[in-house]
Image 1 (cartoon, one colour):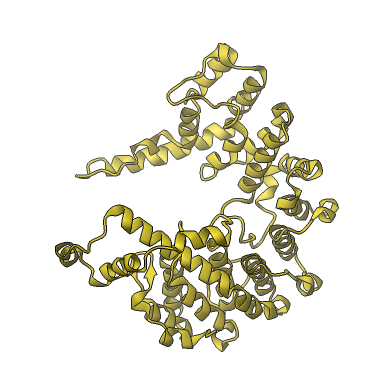
Image 2 (image 1 turned 30 degrees about the horizontal axis):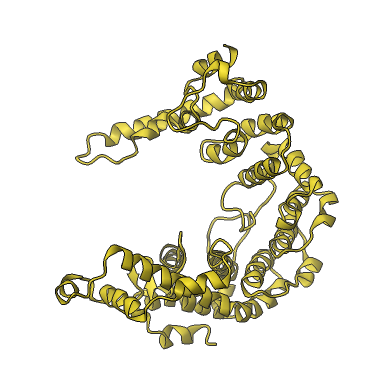
Length: 433
C-alpha cells in the first residue's frame, strides 16, 4: 500500500470526490506539507478539514490523502515546530496525527457495521459513473439533453454510495495506518505521544485490531496522556473500571465514559460526583483529548443524562449537578450543558407552554436553579446585546440572513424551545405561582 509522496503522483484525483466536487487541487494543496512554508501548511490543513472531512463522514479523496499524511510522520519536515497557539510547541508531526485521528473518527460512520456500509455502496456502477462525470463536466446541460442527467434521488444515492465506499476503504487501510502510528507512541515529545495514542485507538477500532498502549502507558508523564490512553481503551471496549478509583478526577471521569461501563452504578455516580465541581472540569487538560468535540463538561453532562434516564434514577438527586453546571456554563455551550438535565424534565408538544399548575416539585426545583443564578442571566444579557448589535448591522441588507432569532440570546432561546418563559421574571412567576 503506497503512502507518502508517491500517493500524490499515483492517484487520479480528478476521478475522486471531495466536499465541493472533484479533488483536482488536492495534490497542489497537500504538497505544501513538503515545504517549510507555514502559510502553505495552514492552507493544506484547511483543505484537509474543510474538503476531506465532512458531516457525512469521509470522501473518496480522503483515503489517499490519509495515506499521504501517514507517510509524512517520519519525514524530516514533521520535526518542524510551527509558531502556532498551544500550551507548548507543537510539531507538525503532532498536528498530522490529529488529522489521522479525526479521519478515523469520521470513518466510524456512527459505528455502522461493515455490512451496512457495503449495502449502501452497492449501487449501479453506471449511476456512480454518471454522477462523477457530471462533476467533471461541471455542467448538467449536455447530460440533460442526452437523457443522462441524474434526478435528486439518484444523485443522493450515488453520493451516499461513494461515501460508504470511502469509509470501507479507510477501514481496510486502518491496519497499515495503525502500524505507521505505533512507533510514535514512545516518541520523546509528549504531545506526539498523546496524539499517537488517540490515533492508534481510533484506527484499532476501525480495523478491528487489538489495541496495545502499554508502551505509551509506561512513558505517560501527564494527566493529558493518561486520559488519552484511558479514553482510547474505553472506546475500544476495554473494561476501565480499575481507573474509577484513580486519585485524579479527570482519569476517573474518562474511565467512567467507557461504553463498557454504561449501566455500571459506580461509573454513573463518578460522573455525577465530578460534575458537582463542573467549574473545574474544563481546566483539567492542557491539550484536550481529541474525542471531546467541545467542552469536556458538555460531554460529561450529556453522558450522565443518558445514563441517569436509562437507569431510571430520581432526577432530584441530580440537583447538585444542575447547580454546579449552571454556575459553570457559558453561552457557547449552554444548550449542550443544560439540555441533558432539563430536556427530559420539560418535554412538551410543539408550541405548548408550561403553566404553574403543570409543574411538579422536582421541576420547580430545577427552574429555581436557573432563576437564582445571577451570573447566568448576566452572561445571557451580555450575549443577547452582542447578537442584537449584530442584527442591527445586518438588518438593512437586501437579503438579510435568516438568523434574526439570535437576538433572543442562547438562554432565552433554550427556554423558549422548552415551552418556558424567556425572561427571568416570567420564569420566577411560573415557579412561584
